Length: 356
Image 1 (tube, rainbow, N blue to C red):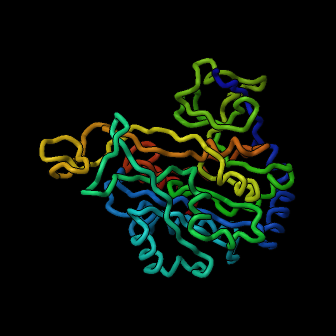
Image 2 (cartoon, rainbow, N blue to C red):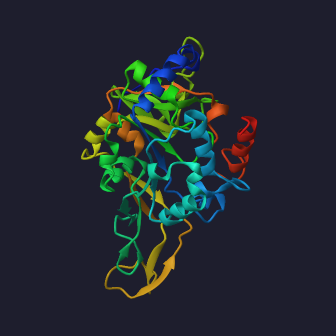
Image 3 (cartoon, rainbow, N blue to C red):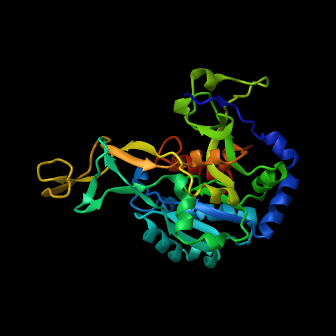
């Protein structure tokens, strides 16, 4: 049965600005009471940028990494306050990330508040569902999706570190303009009585390729642009605004008590077709135990599936959700490519435009 998709109201910028100061005061009270922690999704590598290292270490300009931009943004919001800061890495970049933080003296942040942990992994398969191997006896694995951030955090033994923490600000490493630890954003959820929220950028055109906030069967959700009909993409309200116009940035707030209830829930597992390096047998077939090993193959086309749980599915566990509109040019500068749209070039230009 097809899901019933319906719009979700967004806290528009005009309305937010009317209550900006009261939101900020409420957020600062909660932060000073120890109710907020930060969680950075930083498991990726800079491959698409032509960079051999953790994506967060990529120099957006000489001497200035993506990580350093995020810490600059945090100081803009919280000054010298120091709150718990979790960093989710991966098997591929954990040590390099830790070494970089040590080299940069933790960007001047209280190192006792920073805790690294590795994302859990899931086995990859070929297109027939058979295990692929990266070497003899070692299955090919990949991170289990951004929806696994909290389960991995608890598995790493950091549950006790959340004592007294009511809110978790979860954000990606891509966006160099992400305003994290934002008291106003936090205060908007507190004052409006919501259990989760996301900073939303309004779509610049009906066909912009971005996931949008909606309701799915009456529950908060995010729908991918590929799942939207042309009618949905173009539908507008009485004021001329796109009905499905609140594009998600990866900057979320979650009530930790509800996150704890999701750990053992069976979130959907998505099969994502990808190019997966694999060990071939001597006859060229994917290696299986008992075969004579050949060489490691780096395929030119998708050859298998990675299995991921998504943060967008996690949202459906929350009874309510608040998309909060932000100024796009002030808070949204994703680094997905080296040049062109959403690139290192465009992100640096936006940093400069914002005086950063």
